[in-house]
Length: 234
Image 1: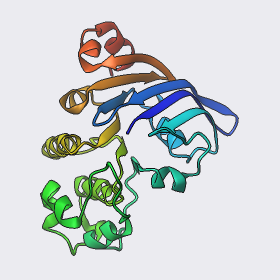
Image 2: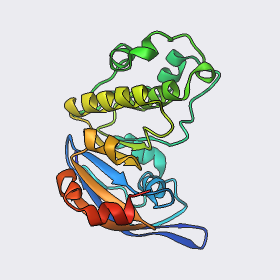
Image 3: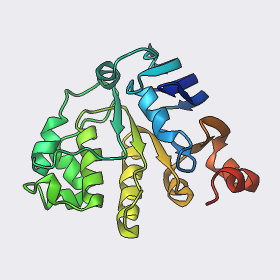
Image 4: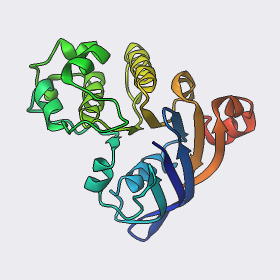
């Protein structure tokens, strides 16, 4: 499964936010979309999954053209999306949240069950009957990822998975993402945390004001201090 994004432009009303963004993700690859707040990372994800009212460009996934596809068709094609604001159902239990995300198995994609997800996220396994609204931020983030995986996607977009989480939870999240990669899942994660991205990503794309300023391997980014200083330093 390959995601290929070329010449992606996006607007919020009259404001032009994305300018010819390009990225490619191969089977089993983890690509980090890096940049400061406001760089356009979340907008890029929203444009890819069809949640941006005005977008232009070419988006293909597994050879299928999704450039103008509505969100439900993007999801049915096997592309999962974990938004930054989590959006769990706070009144539903962990088990019920997972059931909401259930879709049929998909050829070429890992097949997930609640039991497999409890093994991946042991904290969730201890609180199956707990309402989502009574969970910590880190637990809610894990639940959101697990619910998305219940759709058996072959590629997942993770928006700021480490933001606001305690260091121990960040470590657990990195371990889980590496485990997902070992299953053959392709992942794009948006991040400000370069250290977190180094732990799990193969490649990086750096955005600044909606434009790609760097695309290459993590090793190449590490060898480019001028890029890090200009676009990633706080």
